[in-house]
Length: 193
Image 1 (cartoon, rainbow, N blue to C red):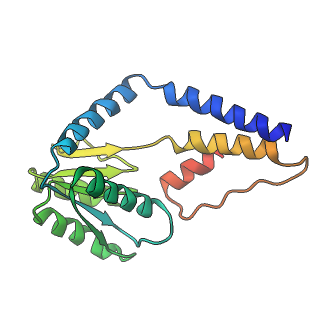
Image 2 (cartoon, rainbow, N blue to C red):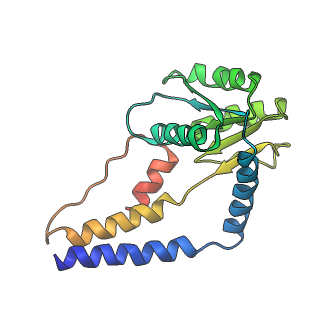
Image 3 (cartoon, rainbow, N blue to C red):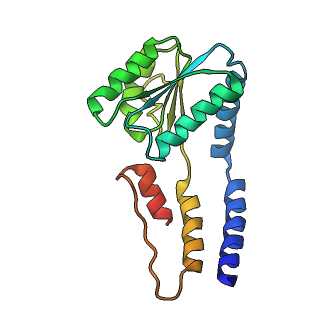
């Protein structure tokens, strides 16, 4: 029991320390979040579309994004649409283009696999704001000022989970990691573990 209490305390301390870190990168992210937040405050009558290049229902990243969309609808009154494209990569870019053709202010994608389609389409739809979660576009390649990217330090959280697991397992026990896909965010979880 003492090991578990120590693990929880260590995790809480480490989390509070990593949450306070930052510097210029954090300041830029906070500035971008403030900009998006101000726009969201004026969301009445506006629309956001989430492109799910996969399927909902596995309790993964896409389901988290969908819950966020539901909160935008409930808390800000934003008109939302969620489009599931399935696993067929040939459908991803056309779905993104169809979403950009709609009367929506924000087009959101939650996947590193959507970098190229967003990088290709965003310059064609300068009146839209594209939000990419879990990766970034090459901002130096062309004007992508209508693209907002958010990345996370999931390795820090998974490190803390690994510490807690390590402290709670009996001597000689085994701790493992199972990742759903071989993609950068999942591998970042693995590195932190």
